[in-house]
Length: 95
Image (cartoon, rainbow, N blue to C red):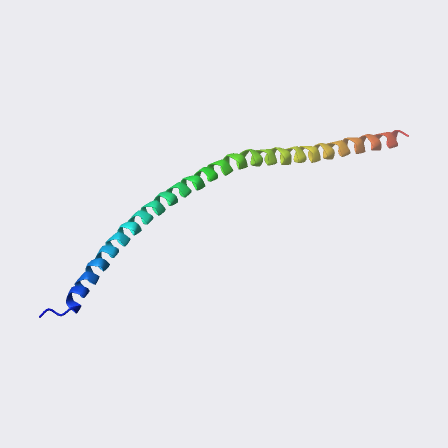
């Protein structure tokens, strides 16, 4: 005689195999969507890097221009002080 446990065990094995197959398919779709999401996030990060770089270059150039103007102003002040110093010494010598 066939034991009652064997058909029940066979049914449980079939149900579990089916559930594992469905679960495997779902995991495949989840991993595929995750890959697409990571690809999109990578593209967004690349675009952000390009935008950041395009904003930082003009700011860097502006900073260089400002530091050049400061250097030019200090250079002009140096010559101005030398010129007025020589003029004032010349006036003292004439007096």
